[in-house]
Length: 279
Image (cartoon, rainbow, N blue to C red; front, side):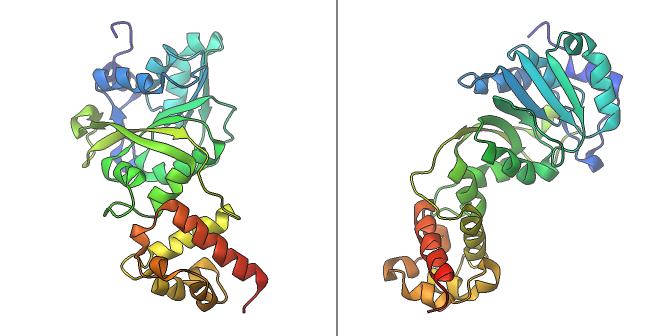
Protein backbone atom coordinates (compact mmCIF):
# COMPACT_ATOMS: atom_id res chain seq x y z
CA UNK A 1 0.00 0.00 0.00
CA UNK A 2 1.44 3.32 -1.08
CA UNK A 3 0.75 5.15 2.19
CA UNK A 4 2.34 2.45 4.36
CA UNK A 5 5.64 3.09 6.09
CA UNK A 6 8.66 1.72 4.23
CA UNK A 7 10.14 -1.21 6.23
CA UNK A 8 13.73 -0.50 5.13
CA UNK A 9 13.38 3.17 6.12
CA UNK A 10 12.05 2.11 9.54
CA UNK A 11 15.17 -0.03 10.07
CA UNK A 12 17.43 2.84 9.00
CA UNK A 13 15.80 5.10 11.58
CA UNK A 14 15.49 2.55 14.39
CA UNK A 15 18.74 0.63 14.04
CA UNK A 16 19.55 -2.74 12.52
CA UNK A 17 18.09 -5.90 14.02
CA UNK A 18 20.44 -8.37 15.69
CA UNK A 19 19.97 -12.02 14.68
CA UNK A 20 21.82 -13.04 17.86
CA UNK A 21 18.85 -11.57 19.74
CA UNK A 22 16.32 -13.48 17.61
CA UNK A 23 15.53 -10.36 15.57
CA UNK A 24 14.55 -11.03 11.94
CA UNK A 25 12.26 -8.30 10.67
CA UNK A 26 9.84 -8.71 7.79
CA UNK A 27 10.69 -6.21 5.04
CA UNK A 28 8.78 -7.58 2.02
CA UNK A 29 5.93 -5.11 1.39
CA UNK A 30 3.76 -7.69 -0.38
CA UNK A 31 3.93 -10.14 2.54
CA UNK A 32 3.40 -7.33 5.06
CA UNK A 33 0.30 -6.21 3.15
CA UNK A 34 -1.11 -9.74 2.93
CA UNK A 35 -0.71 -10.81 6.56
CA UNK A 36 -3.56 -8.68 8.00
CA UNK A 37 -5.91 -9.96 5.26
CA UNK A 38 -5.59 -13.51 6.57
CA UNK A 39 -7.43 -12.28 9.66
CA UNK A 40 -10.25 -10.54 7.78
CA UNK A 41 -12.80 -13.15 8.90
CA UNK A 42 -11.90 -12.38 12.52
CA UNK A 43 -12.87 -9.49 14.76
CA UNK A 44 -9.95 -7.08 14.29
CA UNK A 45 -11.22 -4.34 16.60
CA UNK A 46 -8.35 -4.93 19.06
CA UNK A 47 -5.34 -6.67 17.56
CA UNK A 48 -2.50 -7.96 19.73
CA UNK A 49 0.94 -7.99 18.11
CA UNK A 50 3.93 -9.74 19.69
CA UNK A 51 7.43 -8.75 18.61
CA UNK A 52 6.81 -5.45 16.82
CA UNK A 53 10.44 -4.64 16.08
CA UNK A 54 10.50 -1.41 14.07
CA UNK A 55 6.76 -1.42 13.42
CA UNK A 56 6.41 -2.41 9.76
CA UNK A 57 3.62 -4.89 10.52
CA UNK A 58 2.23 -2.62 13.25
CA UNK A 59 1.75 0.03 10.57
CA UNK A 60 -0.27 -2.37 8.38
CA UNK A 61 -2.34 -3.59 11.32
CA UNK A 62 -3.36 -0.02 12.13
CA UNK A 63 -4.91 0.19 8.66
CA UNK A 64 -7.27 -2.69 9.57
CA UNK A 65 -7.78 -2.51 13.35
CA UNK A 66 -9.53 -0.01 15.62
CA UNK A 67 -6.79 -0.50 18.21
CA UNK A 68 -3.46 -2.33 18.26
CA UNK A 69 -1.55 -3.36 21.38
CA UNK A 70 2.02 -4.27 20.52
CA UNK A 71 4.49 -6.01 22.81
CA UNK A 72 8.21 -5.44 22.20
CA UNK A 73 10.96 -6.81 24.43
CA UNK A 74 13.78 -4.57 23.14
CA UNK A 75 13.79 -1.33 25.10
CA UNK A 76 15.33 0.68 22.24
CA UNK A 77 12.78 -0.49 19.68
CA UNK A 78 9.91 0.09 22.12
CA UNK A 79 11.07 3.69 22.55
CA UNK A 80 11.39 4.06 18.76
CA UNK A 81 7.81 2.79 18.32
CA UNK A 82 6.52 5.36 20.82
CA UNK A 83 8.21 8.14 18.85
CA UNK A 84 7.44 6.81 15.35
CA UNK A 85 3.76 6.20 16.13
CA UNK A 86 3.22 9.10 18.53
CA UNK A 87 0.16 10.33 16.59
CA UNK A 88 -1.51 6.91 16.66
CA UNK A 89 -0.74 6.60 20.39
CA UNK A 90 -2.18 10.08 21.05
CA UNK A 91 -5.32 9.10 19.13
CA UNK A 92 -5.67 6.01 21.38
CA UNK A 93 -5.23 3.67 18.43
CA UNK A 94 -1.95 2.12 19.55
CA UNK A 95 -0.55 0.90 22.87
CA UNK A 96 3.14 -0.02 23.10
CA UNK A 97 4.06 -2.45 25.88
CA UNK A 98 7.78 -2.88 26.55
CA UNK A 99 8.42 -6.30 28.02
CA UNK A 100 8.77 -10.02 27.45
CA UNK A 101 5.71 -11.62 25.86
CA UNK A 102 6.12 -14.58 28.20
CA UNK A 103 5.74 -12.34 31.25
CA UNK A 104 3.61 -9.28 30.45
CA UNK A 105 -0.12 -9.23 31.04
CA UNK A 106 -2.00 -9.29 27.75
CA UNK A 107 -4.98 -6.96 27.33
CA UNK A 108 -8.38 -8.24 26.28
CA UNK A 109 -7.87 -8.58 22.54
CA UNK A 110 -9.98 -9.90 19.66
CA UNK A 111 -7.23 -11.49 17.56
CA UNK A 112 -3.44 -11.78 17.51
CA UNK A 113 -1.41 -11.05 14.37
CA UNK A 114 2.35 -11.34 14.77
CA UNK A 115 5.72 -12.14 13.26
CA UNK A 116 6.77 -14.11 16.34
CA UNK A 117 10.36 -14.23 17.59
CA UNK A 118 11.20 -17.80 16.59
CA UNK A 119 13.13 -18.63 19.75
CA UNK A 120 10.00 -18.29 21.90
CA UNK A 121 7.33 -19.11 19.31
CA UNK A 122 6.27 -22.35 21.02
CA UNK A 123 6.00 -20.80 24.50
CA UNK A 124 4.14 -17.74 23.18
CA UNK A 125 1.75 -19.91 21.15
CA UNK A 126 0.80 -21.95 24.20
CA UNK A 127 0.20 -18.75 26.13
CA UNK A 128 -2.14 -17.58 23.38
CA UNK A 129 -4.06 -20.77 22.55
CA UNK A 130 -5.87 -21.14 25.91
CA UNK A 131 -7.22 -17.60 25.42
CA UNK A 132 -9.40 -19.04 22.60
CA UNK A 133 -8.90 -15.99 20.38
CA UNK A 134 -8.01 -16.34 16.68
CA UNK A 135 -4.49 -15.67 15.47
CA UNK A 136 -2.37 -15.22 12.35
CA UNK A 137 1.24 -15.96 13.25
CA UNK A 138 4.59 -16.32 11.48
CA UNK A 139 6.71 -19.37 12.32
CA UNK A 140 9.63 -21.32 10.99
CA UNK A 141 8.16 -23.50 8.21
CA UNK A 142 9.16 -26.76 9.87
CA UNK A 143 7.40 -25.72 13.10
CA UNK A 144 4.29 -24.66 11.16
CA UNK A 145 4.15 -28.01 9.34
CA UNK A 146 4.36 -29.86 12.64
CA UNK A 147 1.49 -27.78 14.03
CA UNK A 148 -0.73 -28.70 11.09
CA UNK A 149 0.37 -32.35 10.65
CA UNK A 150 -2.11 -35.22 10.56
CA UNK A 151 -1.83 -38.61 12.30
CA UNK A 152 0.38 -41.11 10.50
CA UNK A 153 2.70 -38.51 8.99
CA UNK A 154 6.33 -37.96 10.01
CA UNK A 155 5.64 -34.37 11.14
CA UNK A 156 2.79 -35.43 13.46
CA UNK A 157 3.64 -35.27 17.15
CA UNK A 158 3.00 -33.70 20.51
CA UNK A 159 2.90 -30.21 18.96
CA UNK A 160 0.23 -31.27 16.43
CA UNK A 161 -2.03 -32.79 19.09
CA UNK A 162 -1.67 -29.86 21.49
CA UNK A 163 -2.22 -27.15 18.86
CA UNK A 164 -5.17 -28.90 17.23
CA UNK A 165 -6.74 -29.42 20.66
CA UNK A 166 -7.35 -25.66 20.72
CA UNK A 167 -7.57 -24.56 17.09
CA UNK A 168 -8.06 -25.39 13.45
CA UNK A 169 -4.60 -24.93 11.89
CA UNK A 170 -3.98 -23.67 8.34
CA UNK A 171 -0.60 -22.93 6.76
CA UNK A 172 -1.73 -20.05 4.52
CA UNK A 173 1.58 -18.89 3.02
CA UNK A 174 5.24 -19.88 2.94
CA UNK A 175 7.73 -17.02 3.13
CA UNK A 176 11.33 -17.19 1.83
CA UNK A 177 14.35 -15.97 3.84
CA UNK A 178 14.75 -13.00 1.44
CA UNK A 179 11.59 -11.44 2.90
CA UNK A 180 13.44 -10.72 6.16
CA UNK A 181 16.27 -8.51 7.37
CA UNK A 182 18.59 -10.10 8.32
CA UNK A 183 17.71 -13.29 6.48
CA UNK A 184 17.05 -16.33 8.68
CA UNK A 185 18.61 -19.64 7.65
CA UNK A 186 15.20 -21.28 7.24
CA UNK A 187 11.96 -20.79 5.34
CA UNK A 188 9.04 -19.36 7.25
CA UNK A 189 5.28 -19.76 7.10
CA UNK A 190 2.16 -17.82 8.04
CA UNK A 191 -0.31 -19.90 10.07
CA UNK A 192 -3.96 -19.08 10.74
CA UNK A 193 -5.33 -20.47 14.00
CA UNK A 194 -9.12 -20.52 14.33
CA UNK A 195 -10.30 -21.48 17.83
CA UNK A 196 -12.31 -24.67 18.11
CA UNK A 197 -13.80 -26.80 20.82
CA UNK A 198 -12.40 -30.31 20.40
CA UNK A 199 -14.90 -33.01 19.41
CA UNK A 200 -13.79 -35.08 22.40
CA UNK A 201 -13.59 -34.46 26.14
CA UNK A 202 -10.57 -34.65 28.41
CA UNK A 203 -11.04 -35.15 32.12
CA UNK A 204 -7.91 -33.13 32.98
CA UNK A 205 -6.22 -30.97 30.35
CA UNK A 206 -2.79 -30.84 32.00
CA UNK A 207 -2.74 -34.62 32.47
CA UNK A 208 -3.79 -35.04 28.82
CA UNK A 209 -0.87 -32.90 27.59
CA UNK A 210 1.60 -34.67 29.91
CA UNK A 211 0.35 -38.06 28.74
CA UNK A 212 0.69 -37.11 25.05
CA UNK A 213 4.19 -35.75 25.72
CA UNK A 214 5.16 -38.99 27.47
CA UNK A 215 3.96 -41.26 24.67
CA UNK A 216 5.68 -39.24 21.96
CA UNK A 217 9.05 -39.72 23.70
CA UNK A 218 8.56 -43.35 22.57
CA UNK A 219 7.05 -42.67 19.16
CA UNK A 220 8.77 -45.68 17.53
CA UNK A 221 7.44 -48.11 20.16
CA UNK A 222 3.96 -49.56 20.32
CA UNK A 223 1.44 -47.72 22.48
CA UNK A 224 1.60 -50.70 24.89
CA UNK A 225 5.34 -50.25 25.44
CA UNK A 226 5.14 -46.45 25.36
CA UNK A 227 2.65 -46.46 28.25
CA UNK A 228 4.76 -48.96 30.21
CA UNK A 229 8.04 -47.10 29.63
CA UNK A 230 6.92 -43.57 30.48
CA UNK A 231 5.23 -43.73 33.88
CA UNK A 232 8.00 -41.47 35.23
CA UNK A 233 6.97 -38.79 32.68
CA UNK A 234 3.18 -39.19 32.68
CA UNK A 235 3.05 -39.66 36.47
CA UNK A 236 1.28 -43.04 36.28
CA UNK A 237 1.80 -45.25 39.32
CA UNK A 238 0.57 -48.42 37.59
CA UNK A 239 1.11 -48.29 33.81
CA UNK A 240 0.33 -52.03 33.51
CA UNK A 241 -3.19 -51.44 34.85
CA UNK A 242 -3.71 -48.85 32.10
CA UNK A 243 -2.45 -51.30 29.45
CA UNK A 244 -4.85 -53.94 30.76
CA UNK A 245 -7.79 -51.53 30.37
CA UNK A 246 -7.09 -50.61 26.72
CA UNK A 247 -8.14 -52.41 23.54
CA UNK A 248 -5.51 -54.39 21.66
CA UNK A 249 -6.07 -52.53 18.37
CA UNK A 250 -4.96 -49.32 20.11
CA UNK A 251 -2.09 -50.91 22.05
CA UNK A 252 -0.54 -52.36 18.88
CA UNK A 253 -0.38 -48.99 17.11
CA UNK A 254 2.42 -46.45 17.44
CA UNK A 255 1.79 -43.07 19.11
CA UNK A 256 2.21 -41.23 15.80
CA UNK A 257 -0.78 -43.13 14.37
CA UNK A 258 -3.23 -42.11 17.10
CA UNK A 259 -5.73 -39.33 16.39
CA UNK A 260 -6.14 -36.67 19.13
CA UNK A 261 -9.50 -38.14 20.18
CA UNK A 262 -7.83 -41.54 20.75
CA UNK A 263 -5.16 -39.88 22.89
CA UNK A 264 -7.96 -38.20 24.83
CA UNK A 265 -9.77 -41.49 25.44
CA UNK A 266 -6.50 -43.14 26.52
CA UNK A 267 -5.65 -40.27 28.87
CA UNK A 268 -9.12 -40.42 30.42
CA UNK A 269 -8.74 -44.17 31.08
CA UNK A 270 -5.25 -43.64 32.52
CA UNK A 271 -6.42 -40.81 34.79
CA UNK A 272 -9.38 -42.82 36.01
CA UNK A 273 -7.08 -45.68 37.02
CA UNK A 274 -4.57 -43.28 38.55
CA UNK A 275 -7.21 -41.54 40.67
CA UNK A 276 -8.71 -44.87 41.68
CA UNK A 277 -5.31 -45.99 42.91
CA UNK A 278 -3.24 -48.98 41.79
CA UNK A 279 -5.31 -52.03 41.01
